[in-house]
Amino acid sequence: MSLSPVNLDSFNHQSTKLTTGRTYHYVDQLPANYDANKTITLLLIHGFPDLWAAWKNQIGPWVEAGYRVVAPDMLGYGQTDKPDEPEEYSFKKLSDDLAALLNHIGSPKAVLIGHDWGSFIASRFVLWHPQRVLGVAHLSVAFFPPNNEYVPLEEIARRIPDYAYQLFFADPATTKKIEDHVEFFYRSLFAVSGTSGGSISDLARVLNGEIKVDPSVIKTILSDEELKFYTTQNDSFRGPLNYYRTTKIRFDEEKADNLPPTYTVKIPVLFLRGTADSTSPEASIGLIKKFLPQTKVINYEGAGHWLMHQEKENVAKDVLSWLSESKLSSKL
View 1 (cartoon, one colour):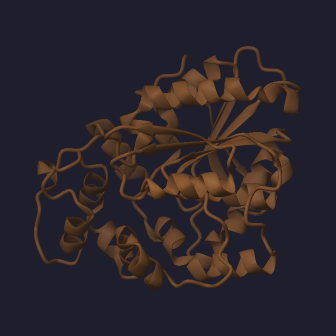
View 2 (view 1 turned 135 degrees about the vertical axis):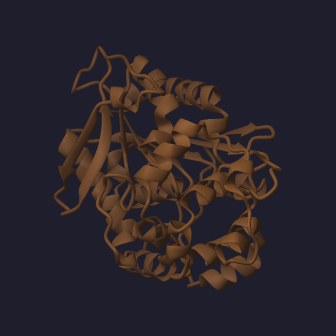
View 3 (view 1 turned 90 degrees about the vertical axis):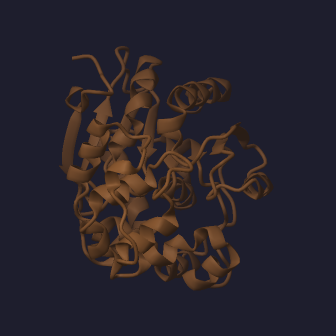
């Protein structure tokens, strides 16, 4: 069966209990010319509140270009385990899960491609497992180094007002509010820019019972089929929201392991960002260039946060160009 973004059953779905003790669902696509000793693996890491299917439009082109592509449902999502405790979502544990997944599929090294929280996780994977990485592509969220001092989420939101929504997501009471309004939640997050009722502030006000908005009036970048898939696969939100409840947990584990401020291996780095994405300000370019001067930066003019949906052909093409330029095959 040939891969089709509109037929998610056409992908090669797998599930396994990793050596870390957690069971992960993932898609594993092999190219026609697959060679266990030469084929490069691309490990795709989605963010909040996505699924493996966030990459459905890129997996086919990357496989056709000769890459093995592995895209898991991250912990707490879809068909992967959903532990309740926030500490289970520490980024060291998530990185160890991904390393165990690479072990399971027999890939000693991989190129990591992450979006949103997935980009952050990819950066920490490189810091904890540097010898497992051939290169890394950050989408929408740039690399930033481990903090020397603990900064509470409340202070982060004060310093960066665009991140204030993270306090709402970190609040334990938000879990049930979202679960009671799943369709509205997804429509709001994936709303077409400027759509009435589709902002984060509108989302919080609706979930807090302050205003009412008919979900059907919110125009979204998702099709009806995509929206149905998301709302049925992610009907529980304690796990996904736990990522926002790990600020102190992440600081403690990074401090304990004395993580370096930048990547300790010489690898190619790509940063893709939408110029209209409030979570990816222009200042983030300077930050990633400061710590990773080898980074190639591509801006998508007018694009928002959901690059794999909004710039699906460009993301597929630009990642392939970067991979080709990087000549990664000689580094296996």
